[in-house]
Length: 118
Image (cartoon, rainbow, N blue to C red):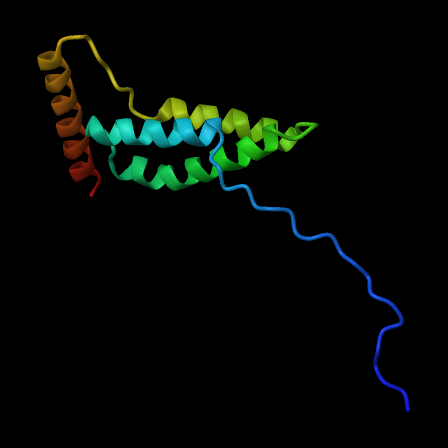
């Protein structure tokens, strides 16, 4: 009478806890997109870039926290920074009326250009 009982138990390490805490880059990217939204500068292109940049920021936070930073992480960081440079700039002159006018002109220009592209 044989049974399928193991000879001994093998203990495995439990899965490491998943750290979902946003890092510095992800936190800064979330704030940047919130500021762009508040300033009325989130067009369709910026909306499309947002998820990619947030995911990249999360990956970079983890990659840069590693003991040894990989070449791939360094290349991704460079591309991330270049993409951030392409986002609209929030201009503040200290004069809220001029800032509001500038933001309105930027929004109208984007709207006009998006109509031309369609």
